[in-house]
Image 1 (cartoon, rainbow, N blue to C red):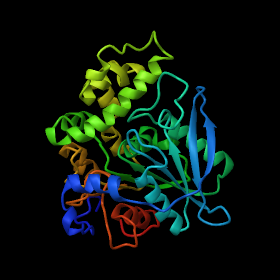
Image 2 (cartoon, rainbow, N blue to C red):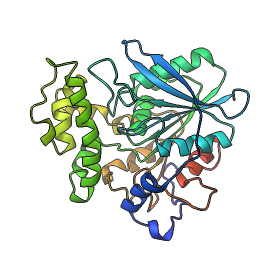
Image 3 (spheres, one colour):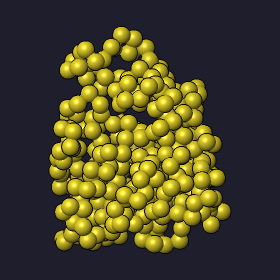
Amino acid sequence: MPVLPSSQYAPPVLLRNGHAQTIFPVLFRNPPPVRPRTERMETPDGDFLDLDWHQAGRQPSNRLAIVSHGLEGNSRRKYVLGMVTALNRRGWDVLAWTMRGCGHEPNRLLPSYHSGFTDDLRHLLSHVLNARDKIDVALVGFSIGANQILKYLGEEPERVPPQVARAVAISVPCDLSATAIRMKRAQNRIYTEYLLRSLRRKIWQKSERFRSELDVSGLDAISTFDEFDERYTAPMHGFAGSAEYYRLASCKPFLEAVRVPSLILNATDDPMLSPESIPHAEATANPNLFLETPKHGGHVGFVDFANGGEYYSEYRACEFLDGGSP
């Protein structure tokens, strides 16, 4: 059944709250140190992506997982490294990539990344498969990285490389408009301000190089995502406004066309996701979508102390990618 009737996740007693689940890993998790092989990949439009390669063993594996981070994240975030460690333990090589504009060095162009930008994922796959075509590829994404993955799989399903075997999408904002509204809630103010502070800082930095293209008057007064997206994200990336951006960048309209078996793991207590981002109808209609909605887990949380340091999202992702129970 595409909509899974139950979840195995049993959260720690003190973390049966969406905000606690969301904040705890950021403050207290310490994933094992890693030493990836780094690579800078040039994009066709003259920008670049920074890649972290994590090899499971001495020799390259015939299985590769590509991990996409969330909004204002990067390839070294704790939740990414936790997933990398879990996948490596099971013999998966992992490529964790940093979206343009999210690394230590600003990207070169005025546009950077956005929630529905799939071109870089598409180019990244081509880059990987040109070098290693006889492998099985899995896509794993968090938050907007998960939205990108599902949108990519449904945009042009006939053009998805056959090597892409499965996907896992964790804490997916399937409906970006509803998510922007949800983030205006008072209890979400801490997350909104944290993310907007980073986004505003990047606009200030870009304005030094693109003075004629960016109007920074009133930038520091922006306090909501729809304000920021209306003034910056949408026009910088070719959208008429935030409403068009949310409509065209959300993965939800593309879910019906997904052909790659994909697990969607969205907690019902996720403080950032509204009910519109729990795609029950789409999963019911598409046999390739497996929707799991634990009662607890927060946003990119799913804390678990019972699996040798692995969080439930990591254990569950590996189980699904290894062909286990959907």
